[in-house]
Amino acid sequence: MFIALSALVMLNGCIVSDKKLTEKVQQAIVDDEQQKGKTLEVTDFQLSEKQNPKKGVLKGRLDGQEVTYDVTVTDEGSDFDVDWQLREN
Image 1: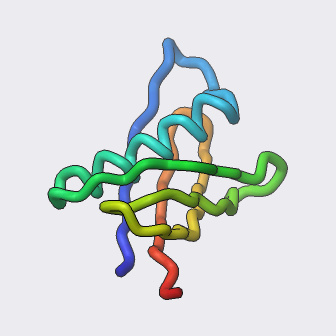
Image 2: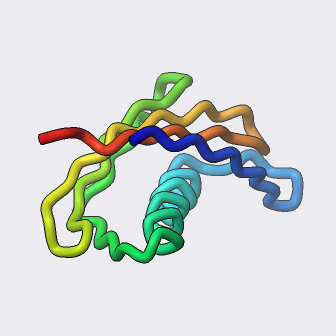
């Protein structure tokens, strides 16, 4: 399962902080699963801060089962692209 999401982030013309970007990416993944009728409870999400594209791992429970997503975020200041893939365990 591979999902690509583009999100436009504008905060009064400011560059989005790493913390805010992490929160927005996490919420986008949760919202996507919710639109599919599933419940994702995030237990941990780590996103690299120094590289671009940023790489990360999101762990949680999807409808009660442990899951891991590999996440890639290309941050271009006021705009970012998010790609994530559910790992096959």
